[in-house]
Structures are given as structure tokens and as C-alpha cells.
Length: 255
Image 1 (cartoon, helix red, strand yellow):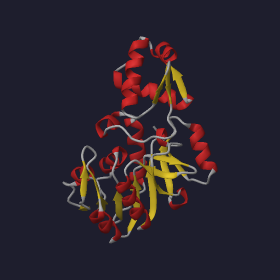
Image 2: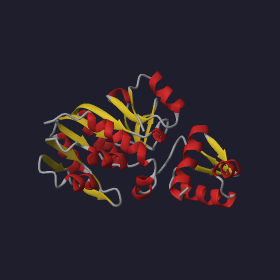
Image 3: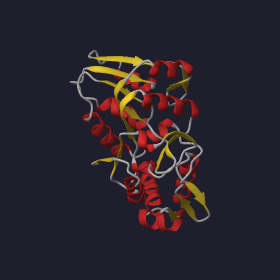
């Protein structure tokens, strides 16, 4: 098992159980306790779990997220499945918004070659991915760019999205919680998402199951302002059930 695969397995176990000991993980994954401790430290430094004495716990509230490069390799198959389901909802000639984030970038890659329409984005990375698609009218909002993620924000970006009405918006997420709603880590980008949501006929959140039940530090909107959450079936069934009980429409992508 490669280190990235082992770390993904660790995260899956911690998120499914809420907590796991280093000894338990060592036995189930067939590596030394010291290797597990090193993995746990690395995952803690990325903000993906809480390190406690003897093991790790799943955070229900996070003040930050890992780097874009680190997040891009985690749960990749799930993100690709979510992106494929989201892409299947896009109709020809529509105006759509693709937000920032690792799953949003996968959606840009999953848009069918036959799609002819307009894409609005606040992601430099999404824009770069679609820049050679001659059948797509591509508009990048501009503004202040956050290093790593290539996310644009600021007054210029808000004004840009306020001038459009999209058929569908596909939003990234820091967390999706039945009471806290859709949350994010960056206040300027949370404001952009609020504007996008208000100016879209349908708003879909792209969130792999590790983000369900999580509260990031800045609120974007209540869940009743969203059309659906597109997620996976891999883990976190309790959080999925709680969201469904709160009236949230969950679209599950098969892995």
C-alpha cells in the first residue's frame, strides 16, 4: 500500500468511527505504530484530523484546510465520481458557474466534449482547464487571487457574479452541516458563494462525504438555499442520514 493510500484508509477509519487508536490502525494496515504516528502527524498538519494521545479523532469544527496539492490527492476517485454526476446535470447551451476547489476542478475536466455553453468561474485553475475549449464561452471573474488554490475574490469578483444569472451553479464546500449550513474557510470566498447562489436558478454543492457534518469557520448560507448536495457513498452514513432528515436533497455518486 502506498503512503497516500494508507493515509486515505486512516482518514476513512477515523471519519467512520469518530476516533481510532494508533495500535488499531497499525494492526489493520500492517505497518508499524511509528509509521501510523507519522501519518497521523502529517494528516493533523493538513487539518484533516485531530491528533490525540494514542491516536486521532475526527474534527467536527475546523479552522483551516490543507493545501490544494495535498487535498487533490485525497479521495480522488470519490471526487471524480461526484464530478461525473455533476457533469451529467449540465445541459447544452446553459450558463453554469464552476466554483473553486479540488472537486470543482474535476468537474471542469468531466464536462462532456459536446457541451456548448457559457462557464463562469472564480477559479484560475478551472479557467486554465477549460481555456482550449473553443465551444465554451469562458469568463473568469478576476480579483485577488489566493495562492495555491487560484481562487479569486474581492469586490471585483462579487460585482462580476452579480451581473449574471446562471442556470446552475456548482459550489465547493468547507463543510456541510444540518444546523450550520454550508460553510467555508475564507470569508471573502464565502461572500462570493453567497452572490453566486443568489444569482443561480439551481445551486449544487460538491462535497465528498468527509465534509458532511463538518463546520468550517465562515457561514455561506442555510441549506434550504441549495438545490442538492452531490456526495459519495463511501463513508459517514450517520452524517448523511442527519442531513437527509433535515430535508437536504443528497445525490449520491457511485464510486
